[in-house]
Image (cartoon, rainbow, N blue to C red; front, side, top):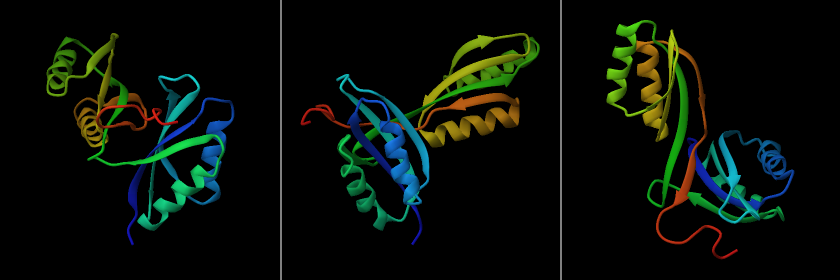
Length: 170
């Protein structure tokens, strides 16, 4: 069976060593984490991890149950396009030497709406947020048309749709 994308929102205690414990759970079982974002929630006692991996669907339940066995894990929810909203952040520095090149890059950028963060003599740095597929397309077109000097990209970050908070019933 083909691997599918699994995105989990994991509520954990906001204490030292949590990231290592969760990541080692995945590595011990041979699951590769393709994206991982972590930050404190609206309640400073907790952090939210958004974990993306690709695995066979029969492993989804096992991964969730193994996470819940860790005492630092308070809640685990599987996220998909129907029940969540997601975004990623991209910072990208692009070749843009001279006025003509800068103008061409800014005209290209009008289609996507990235923010200009820095302009130097030979480069422009852009900030862009969106879905992973949109960021992939943006990066490919930038590289093809202008050439990328460097880039940094966060992983997926997601919230469950609707009212309430993930921490409400904890």
